[in-house]
Length: 298
Image 1: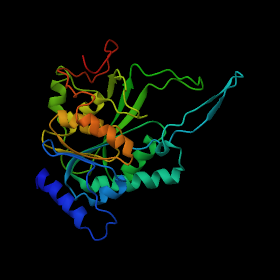
Image 2 (image 1 turned 90 degrees about the horizontal axis):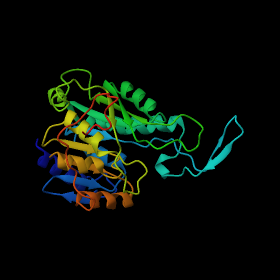
Image 3 (image 1 turned 180 degrees about the vertical axis):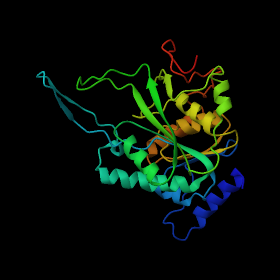
Image 4 (image 1 turned 90 degrees about the vertical axis):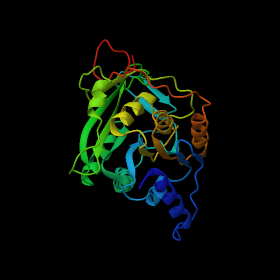
């Protein structure tokens, strides 16, 4: 079944579903490039995606690590209060809630992935451990933990702990058997014929969007090039500012995005329509650890 058939099946299945409370029609649809955006709850939309119809999943789920009005006390006598409020989905939740949330969407992601296809999940120390455990419980095959090292990360203004300059990204295959979809030789070729390592250094681009967790295009570019081919279907269940679709379009991939927040959907639409410029793939990508390197892109 090709992508157009998948999309048609997806749309008709949603439209004709007697058990669905609503007709889930896309907020935005780029018919030429096959980029779809749904302004819905991802846990509901994922249930409607046909099994084994997706070539790659990229997800940046809620971290559940933020608190509002956080007060920092230190043994040196200093105490400060910071307004750390960002978004309702980022608030701290119980561990039980987090396990249930991640188990629910990851189980659906596993179902819709094609055999041999992979999922990429980003997170911080607040959340990535729970995701790791759930992936293993669902019998995904863990391939790598990739460290995203942001060379120009902001300082820790609270002075309560070390400066955070990294995020984690887990890369896993749908199942433990069979071949893995991985463009190893292509990644080696664009890395000056050197085997790529699991630490990716980069300088973050300025974020012009009103979104607290915008993913850097370079991270998506690396993951998409490694885990998919031109014409493949990529799904992002937590689209945020839409970087997945933005980069997928530039790399000639098709994409389904799901985002609950209407304001962010408007932002995604603007990005896809070129309001903030088009993503330009760099001619050279550096994905190895290098003290001299200031960016994955040279």
